[in-house]
Image (tube, rainbow over all chains, first blue to last red; front, side, top):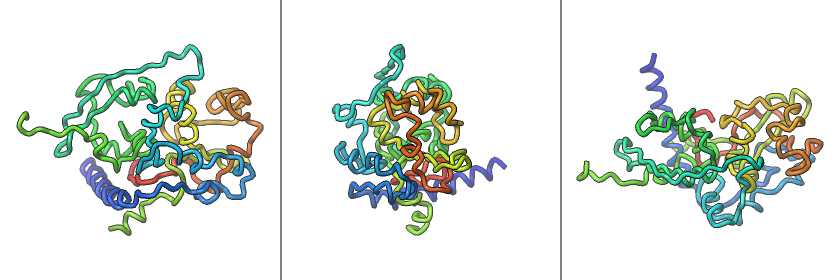
Length: 179
Length: 116
């Protein structure tokens, strides 16, 4: 039963990889579909004309090739956008500057997880402890689970940059000599 | 192979991370809601809605009713006529195509087997 499920997951991941490779090649021009032709908005909806258009808002932000075609981290750091950190004055806004290396990445470069850029957007409680335990080595993260929307896949692949961008996370070369 | 990839692609066009809410909307006689993450993250960090306001980071996990919103919960934290438009402006949020299933619709390059 477990083996069957695992096989299914591996097959699904292989299919995903093909799709990812095919779609990465097409990520060129920065164009945003008009709201009345995006497949989710009803062109007849009376409120549609009042909504901000993606092209108007996103074209002025630092470019990226995937997701919204916006480098959100840069947009924030350069002060081009100034999203509020809290709506309740009493909310404590937490920041943490701590990188964590995930070394068990098989033949891929190791993963560097930067807390700082994540805490600029998120609170500790968004990930701890229900997604990640606060202990090195205590989180059995793997790409199959991420592809299923667990761990990093809660956001990456849904709202943060997608899972086609392997090297943004797998950024630390493994030095075979040291190992 | 490319054909297989194309078959897996999400519907063309929806902006990355657009979320459709339609558990109740159409049943109650209004269009589904389309929530644009891109619009909101220009103005608010993720932590405002996903920490302060209590939206669980999983499509389908938030059982949002209009009664909640009018009482100031969920969207109603801001959509109260002070920070953002009030709940009287039904047409501004309920802009979705009839028949849309709830969930994350927008995808630019990610087409995974996962559930989001």
